[in-house]
Image (cartoon, rainbow, N blue to C red):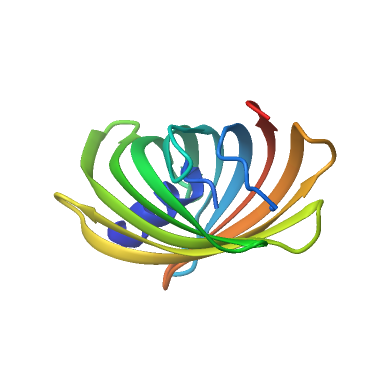
Amino acid sequence: MLRSTLLVILFAFSGAAFADDFNYNSVTVSYGQIDFDDFNADGDTIGINGSAAVSESFHVFASYGVGEIDDGIDTLDVDTWNAGIGYNNSLSDSIDLVVGLSYEYIDLSAPGFGSIDDNGFGLSVGLRMAASDKLEIDAGIAYVDMSDSGDNTAFGGGLLYSFTENFALGLSASFDDDVTAYNVGGRFYFGN
């Protein structure tokens, strides 16, 4: 259960960006909701992430997020961050393949119980697809291997609507066997 929780929380905060040319220079601010399938708990998250192109095919990314998980008895505080490098390759005029490799960190704390932290690495593979000049669809899979909590895999997808060349709003979801996360966010593009 802890493995699933960690992975979906990390995926929800993820900074890897998932048309003609896709812009890999952006900052996103998001709000999310996490639901746990096996027990009565849910949570809220707030995150910021960004990416910056370092060449035509590579970008760096990072994210930071905070959240609270409430099971009706206690509240668990969550802090996460990651940083990594991504590879993007155009498969067609409207589809990019995106692969990311990242360092992952999470800290969980509960009143009266102290805190635990864990770190590891993440690997993600996804597609960015331009459905129109304003609408982007993304889908991907993320694998995280934490040093103490084990490994897990989550799937995700989303929609991103560009109101201007520099601003878009998005909806996304990620899920595995035990946890589902929903996010809404605003993305600001730079370097156009």
